Image (cartoon, rainbow, N blue to C red; front, side, top):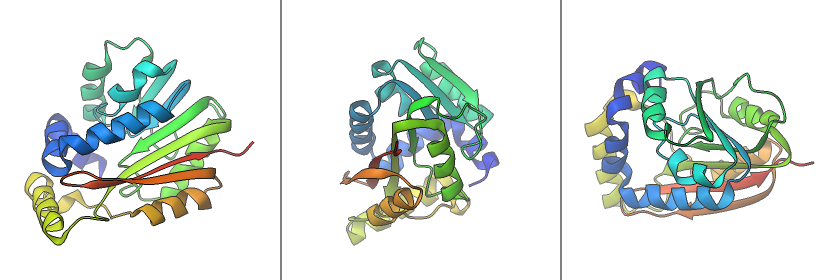
Length: 207
């Protein structure tokens, strides 16, 4: 998806996500993030900060990044009361942040839309200290019934239209991408929701 698309949907993004994925899936992702993320965290493509809210209170600091200025504006409103969170513009494949500066890097619903997933994962690895944690989660149609798939596609088209783009990464494909990027100690799990599922992976940058 283009940056222009994200600019256009920034103000309705949270409501769109509820209609498309359902509130239960966001809650499940948030619970996993809160359990897996600690210390100094960098979030790639934070969007409106919806998922940041779930884990940030448990971390010493969070740098929440995104390319879209309107998305960052929404994130700033949502996260402004958290003194440990900094919101800043950055490309997920080239953030400009110092190498080895993060205990954890997180990206939710990014790998299935970013043009170069390998470059994004390379940047995440660059940002992490040895032993640092990578967490990625992406919405997927894996495990949905035919009826759920039809409803899901209808909701996406209804809210975002054909220009929303994006692919469909299943659990195995997501784990493969993370493994190929040089991460170890992979722990994968398919998170299931009433409307949509999510592929979830926690991994470690080797020492």
